[in-house]
Picture 1 (tube, rainbow, N blue to C red):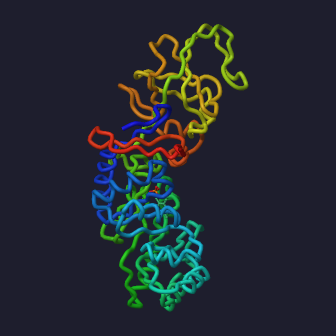
Picture 2 (picture 1 turned 180 degrees about the vertical axis):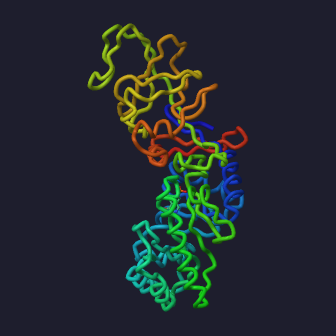
Length: 389
Ligand SMILES: *Cc1c(COP(=O)(O)O)cnc(C)c1O
């Protein structure tokens, strides 16, 4: 299959399937596959279709357009919007069988009043300590009183209830205590419901870090797997027993190779000065592709299994690397993230350089970069959102 071999991502769907099996085996419950933000930059179409094929029946997204996109790809099963949707969309949500999170009484009333016919599937979000969205549950506030009110809103079909952990990815003792407190607060809501004979079929708390670090087996019906599906660790504080395989690599192309003289200064601002004669290669990747400017003079790429340091500033569309002493030619491929022979550059390695997390880097791979999908070593599809002709 054809695609522009400038900068591109290879995405290995076999690794996605492998990760799902790993996560299922430790979560021991049904999974919501979190495919928000274009499947964390991996491309929601092929990712969600692959998940659908391996039996995932629940999907979670951040907004209405993402949910509609999944339906347009033929995804059946539940699609839950985790965040806010303007009430004007409620009848279309019913039409396309999209479930909405309700997290505030005024929002719930407004949603309910916009419904013309049918019922909206909803999940109730409980705020057990994140202070983002959700009905407050803590030592002073009981969410139960508000949940009771939701049951008077006759156009809701209450399908689920959930909460979200703020620090399940930390081994810090106080953070562990906090996560346990979040679990206890959520369990209190479940107890209040049970005492009042209210049964909610779908109950979920764990994100990737929650699945990996907290054994909630026998509790809750579902968990929400995001970053771990893509083979990335939520943080360094993660039980090493889980084996995940990164599914995405980023590759780019050598546009030119040249010798530069001693004292040459490379790229904008002349931030790199050659102490001696060097050989440099110019790559067709820059910050407009999502390759951060913070990598200037710091990151490495791999060419034929050898690390090559970025020289000078990362530009919008081009980056210069040191290939002194290496046999490198125009048209060669450089691995920006991923494996080359015995070497590997991980998202985590790059995230450290930008003082950020792997999540932000994958979400930041721009739409200029084609995504190429592999299954059993064959290319089964290419998505290139940069083409408008
Ligand atoms: C994004 C998100 C997740 C997934 O988190 P990961 O750390 O990627 O597993 C789960 N639940 C909610 C509410 C989210 O917003």
